[in-house]
Amino acid sequence: MKCEITIIDVLREACAKYADKPAFSALNHTLSYAELDKFSASFAGYLQQELKLQSGDRVAVQLPNLLQYPVVAFGILRAGCVLVNTNPLYTARELKHQLYDSGAKAIVILENIASTLSQIVTDTQVEHVITTQIGDMHRPLKRLALNLVVKHIRRMVPPFDLGSSTSLPRALSLGANKYQPVPVAPDSLAVLQYTGGTTGVAKGAMLSHSNLTANMQQICEHMRQLFGEVKETYAAPLPLYHIYAFTIHALCILSTGNHSVLIPNPRDLRTVVKVFKDYPLTGFVGINTLYNALLDDSEFKQLDFSRLRSCSAGGMALTSDTARRWEKLTGCRIREGYGLTESSPVVAANPDNGVRLGTIGTLLPCTEARIVTEAGEEAGLDEAGELWVRGPQVMTGYWQCPEETANVMSEDGWLKTGDIATRDEDGYLKIVDRKKDMISVSGFKVFPNEIEEVACMHPDIVECAAIGVPDSKTGEAVKLLVVSRDPGLSQDMIRKFCRSRLTAYKVPRLVVFRSELPKSNVGKILRRELRDQESGDQRHQKAAR
Image (cartoon, rainbow, N blue to C red; front, side, top):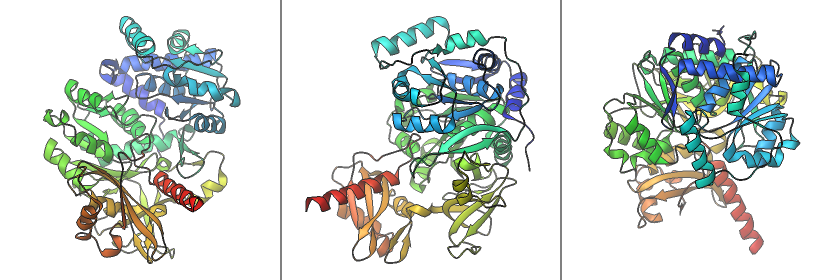
């Protein structure tokens, strides 16, 4: 299967077919499909006619979930340029690497975070900076009020000096009625999506138009019930600069004429609750930590969930305890799936005709998978091995990193995911754990996901993370870091709870309580950071002796 349409084709058809329907909402303002078409064309015109950017030029976007994001993202693609998604939480070092590595010629950035860019912009190839304020896509009076409050009353915009820059409203004005469609081939580069920042230097996964539109078609075919035409209103708490949210909201939901309600900061649970109150939500896309946090929110528990019929999870393992509690509260089952940045991203998901808790479901149409043992052989049923995948959604490679590409992709197109999986007789896949996260206790393989799954069954544990730490007797031992609801919960109580449910070598040797655990921008617990902290603590202890 090779998709012969571009993201521009998808946008053009959707905007023509659903012109008067709501496309995106944020902060109590809505853009229709017609307005999305108009504004994205204006931004494309600005890039073409005012900045003189050419097809293939890279343009970075550093925005949270605001209405500006779909406007500028689609504008960049319509101009034939390449979208470089950039995390607003990046430090100056991280931002410098991504801008320099991608060779971005322009960047669109929220003023609230522009001070970081001002520190490093002269060390990059960026020639043009377009700044935006939070209220820029609202009506004039609301725009003025929002921007004044954010900048002068709440003082949420640190001072910055970018030299010459253009505001987004001015850019849209300058580009109005100037857009000239350009030929864009389906196999041309659409998005540079950076990944791997927690395992070393971030690499840009090259995702073509056909990679992304193929994945859109695969998802919509595999889960038809999720995307009824002009029937759905989905909350979008995951950032659109993350490829999972981008593919779901900017492609799947958009292509079917449905409505996405953007949530700029999902860590502020009040804003998530408000979206549930203000909109007739039928769908919700999140990850385990967000579902867990909402389940512990007293105001959320009082909401009406009668319209909610579709909930999906990805990004990290969904624990069975969280899934069961969510279904009990809302009446809606969470459908778990699996993907990677390198696969645009979805590879597998629980299908319409059978959701199985604890699995990532079955492969999407036109997707192949192999499970490979350490000996390099094909694994048998229910036997664990590294998951390899192949399909039209798999990236073309890493940007300017041929050696890294060769490390993860075979010559015949197989992507080595680095995840350990099993497959049952019905084709359902289960991710056992990350290959690099596996713990070896006296030669026995221990998967952190299993430890965390069991520990989270304890009613007083909010969330936890299991890591391996050096041990003189067993090589490695399991250390469990816990966020607890009850200050009276002890290490011995947790170990006793785990001992009744796990074989002895899997029981955490060490239990440490934390007020919080480090998380990525989308809320995924960062085991790598916990391991690094553990290594640092051990080095400090040795130095002190």
